[in-house]
Length: 232
Image: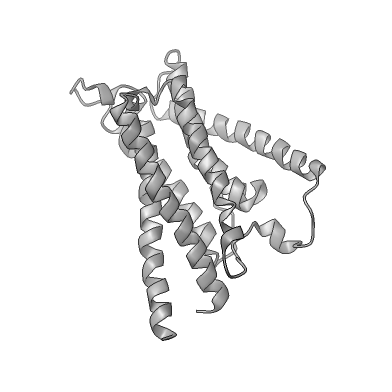
């Protein structure tokens, strides 16, 4: 394992460790504040904004690395000397807005096809869509750029050996899987408050996102330990 690979893994480890610390805290705090069952209401939006802010904070992690980090946006690798202008930032924001709108339509249609109410519960369904966007498109776009994020979401990203892309792909897959698994408890005749649409789906998505980070954390730690043993 070269130095660059080790640096990538250390940075990815810091990303996952950060999420594994703050994310459960937010869920526990929401539970104790009796706000966990409000995940299908617009009043849950501030929590999602906190998650977005946490992903933005991760972009600062490479600045404190002692070694030159290699996990950076792919388009920055292609042109490392290019400075981000206001026009480029606005262009990226415009592309993200279009991507978010298009993906939200896809998510909404898919959710309806899987049995969500069509004529009622629009707020609840919309919140599930916003949650999925927050956990899939937002982190991937922040770390890879909008174009590469769409490639990863559509399964069209072909570059191999990028551990950040692999980790983000696991996040997306686990989030979608958690959403689907959460929906399986809704038809059960238990009459529990956490079975109300879309509470189990949103909670399933959040837990799937968290589990994905734990999986990446567990996979990254042994590789770093092996590197230390080899270089002793």
